[in-house]
Length: 403
Ligand code: PMT
Image (cartoon, rainbow, N blue to C red; front, side, top):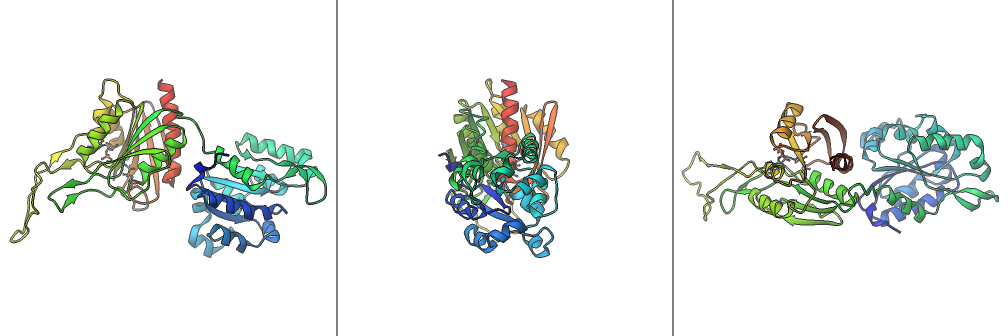
């Protein structure tokens, strides 16, 4: 069973009305054992089989039941929930729910979320064997398959109604196993990827430094996504307080010049370089040995010098890897990002605005506008991990086309 890649994933578990809803309680436990953050949405039918309190206790999160509940919307509204999820999993998915999903209804919270999300959707059907076999259910499932909705099971066997046949929901561990395969894209299998992340810190004296607001979250999310895609990932990280994503090799640095040295040593061996770090543009070339004294001083002048442009240096290498930059802008996003892409000879640039406090630096969400020669793609506002996965898929596609 390959389950470790579910660590830190956000699974929105939809529970619909069916006797198999009792197994979903164990499913929540199994998911949490894998480090999954689970949020549960229950339909009205599901609540007749199992009390929402059970899922609240097991998931350690409030259970969502109503589309038009002002209190719930004030916490995490349906659009936030739809954006939050890495995957929407409906287990059990009843025949009625499958029909409503197949026809694009949005008459309760769960169906609305399914329309509003850009995350992959998976269903684990559970129903009486005759309901499963019937033509209209199979037609509905064909429709869902055409919309790339994943189907886990059902299994064959004895049913709660006393009949035997297909329609049993998969066991929780089997569902967990199926779910983990959704995160294995293999799109960068064995490709060596070097990523920079976080801020750099430039000393002014032994106790003071200049830096910026980067937390490293975006770059770390990109490193995690690249590892999930099968890449051999090295992360050169400025000073941040984040843990290393699983399967990623990390090299810690402090200043821009240390980052430049580490990158230039490692990059020769790499096929892709992604610069998500917010590298300081200037440093203090003469750092005094002692603390600068402030007594009697109303003003102070510090002479700064330009740091090495790591990204441009990598792109200028005779055998440069596929090179992806980031552009953090407060205005004229496209114009400035395209200028950086051309000036630094990049294969691709991911531009983000850093003037909105809800996006960019430090927070968990972002939005990217990605440019390459002759093309562009907008990745709308979403959690950084989700954006990172979409960005890695885009990079993998362009990288393989270029090869
Ligand atoms: O870390 P978070 O809090 O999650 O925030 C994410 C982020 C906003 C920092 C990230 O998404 C981002 O935009 N990173 C790049 C920030 C930046 O420095 O942008 P820039 O436009 O100043 O630089 C352009 C590119 O050149 C970047 O890829 C940068 O890594 C690179 N660069 C810049 C200067 C330098 N001396 N060397 C470089 O390699």
